[in-house]
Length: 495
Image (cartoon, rainbow, N blue to C red; front, side):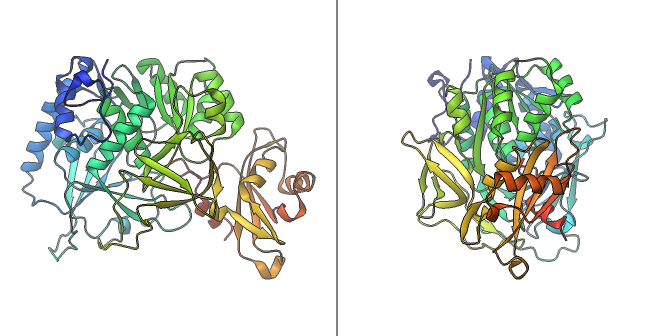
């Protein structure tokens, strides 16, 4: 069994502080006896770790034939397919800088997406989804497009090699471009693998997008660096997921709360998982309990696009520990609570900078190597973190400080209500009590509740100053690629 790859496999693990070159990881993967039967698959094609060297050599020949100059940065529209995963591995191997973007036509792509490709990108790289795409023939799936057709001067990045650029979710406003070191991402992936006790015996399914840092760093890279078998899922519905389970038989999964709920509703058979990691918005206690009891150990991971995973439970923690807290800080991460009650972190391998589309550095929120997450939290004597909610999700109403998450939990107790998000907007003149509160409610199946009935119930369970001014029922919550609720999309529904 291979735990964490290192130059000395007899050590059995990859020490988090050990700066392992990516090509050394590749050599270990392709030569180890522990990975000879393991593979990466998207359900249509499968590449064994033994085939990696040949596949990467073919990608090298393809790019050399394109007669392109060393690009400043490549805009990579990445999907959850085997060809995309191999291309990712190749870009890491070559230390080619790139920005991860959703694939064309993705339902989670933002409007006016073409304008969101940074100006410092020289080429756009896309992956064909045609049935003729063969991972052993790069020309059948790769499309490389020069973005600067007229050869006008491009903005130059100060340090372009070995970087990966990702964008924040933009759940409450405009997304930012974040700079990560590829080496730091690999070091973090080793830390995640150690926390989750991933080994080459595991079979890991990744139904979350690998163009997002959660799917890439916590999911794909941590599983890849341990030599585990990996199954990527491009589109996830209950039928395709159950079909994948029968064929692949995963024992580890990277989920969001929405995927947890999908599996709980759609699969009757219990068991099957050694570990399921969930990230994104908070998972409700009832869903956590039901899922953990039915399918296996569930843990919540807390993190950000800037810092990656910051805290997570250990698979060996008790059920009550995993339910009540997010767990302890990841290896190499220091945590503290600010005077305002906000969680701060000091990671060993954090992000480098914020950039604009021209590649110019924006203001850096890191002060003395500490990054304030914007989340209210507590840390107990054992070092376990409990996230209370966003600091900007508390409002002053009639002189009382109100946590929006507390209102959400209370309204979710109303029979017939499944999920609630409460947002605030400035309309002081009309209401005279501070910010206006709007509750967006998803009803349970067959529920006949309406907005007026929900608000009437609120008078029985909430103090008067915490009762939402408006209730809006919706079919489902808009979800970002990182599994979080798209609060900006909800606000747009009120315009």
